[in-house]
Length: 318
Image (cartoon, rainbow, N blue to C red; front, side, top):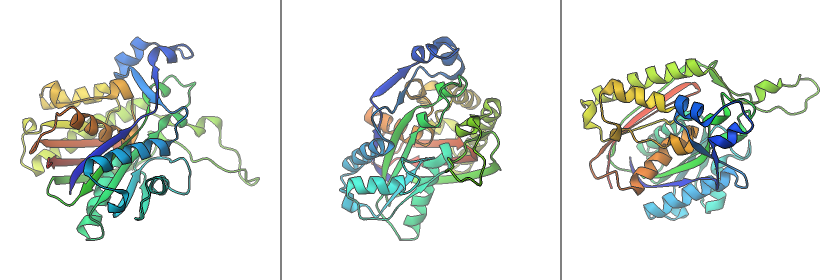
């Protein structure tokens, strides 16, 4: 598999830490020092489908495809605009696609999981040109009265158009079967036979210290496995595109590998944690900035609720 085109979609509204400090017991200094986040984008008038469509159209243009060239559309998301139809089907309708379309949910690891699904379809000979979306509207899932949660997240959509090629050299997924540290209940209807869900269970709940510990340990382990599998030294990798959850997590990985900061690009400062959308948006930014060249080795690694991880390595092909 190789990536032929990328794209991104962001809301128009940018929210600064100072705006959060106006209604939360927090400050810009506290948020930046603990997370690295300065701003995030939040949907106001846009829907998640709007963001996904924008990202998808850009990826198609960059790949030189029309919607009719797609054999499959996969969307990674924890929640689309509708429970059903899927976000993938909503975007397929917008794009005028006539291919199968479905969603996957592996939380923040969703983009890597979707890549693995696409690779499997290609290996089985069931698809050649696949559009992968990773799209999250985290602002609708957080409790905006909880100062420990709402400053962390942002909204956005990333997309990649992939086809057959030799760029993808390594892929490894895990799921620990540990759902306690990070979770959110699905909404319920109005059945008179079920009790209402407590208000605090209607939003994302996270044990920050436990998630932080898992993230640091999993990135160190998964990066080590990837490098060993390909007989690479840490410095052989041109860019480490890590999940953008907390700047301190990324810095911890960098220090353990004893590498310079330029190998660990970040966008969490501007975007916050966009869950599955973080890595493909970061990749799109790196390509637009001309920071990826033919033959460069890119390592992507993410972690998320479940607790899931996904890691892959690319030898970049134009």
